[in-house]
Amino acid sequence: MIQRIQTIYLFLAFVVTGILPFFIPLWTMNNGSDYFFMQDQVYVVLFGLSTTLTLLSIVSYKKRQNQFVIGRLNIILNLILLGLFVYRSLNLSGETLAVSEKGIGMFLPIVAIVLLVLANKAIKKDEDLVKSVDRLR
Image 1 (spheres, rainbow, N blue to C red):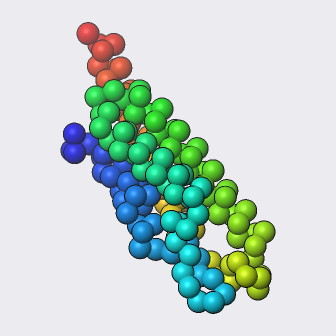
Image 2: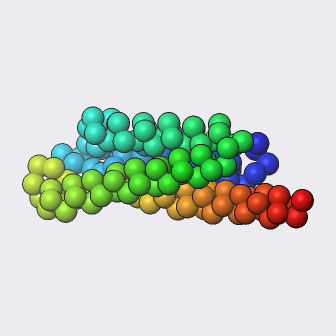
Image 3: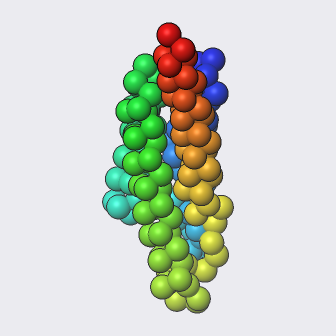
């Protein structure tokens, strides 16, 4: 159901985790080359799982409780991804061979988390509305 606001939020989260990482580098190496998420297997798996969970949440619009739980799992997954980015940037920063300049791609999990929180808030609002209508019957 595209008319629900949480579907829009989930679609934007899909774009942030599934499409933008292909075009936005995570950071720039000392030699000037861009470091994309595809160069590390762990990042590929985590971004893939996040994208899959977002699509699964969009498709399961009839089961709001499942959609809410999937959204929470996706938030936890993006927090793990963000933690890995922070760990990598703090441990391998400086002028070593690893990272010389942080990229905007490291903020993609933050944007995804914000969108998923907004989607979960809207899902919860819908669930409360349905429960209140059922109570009136």
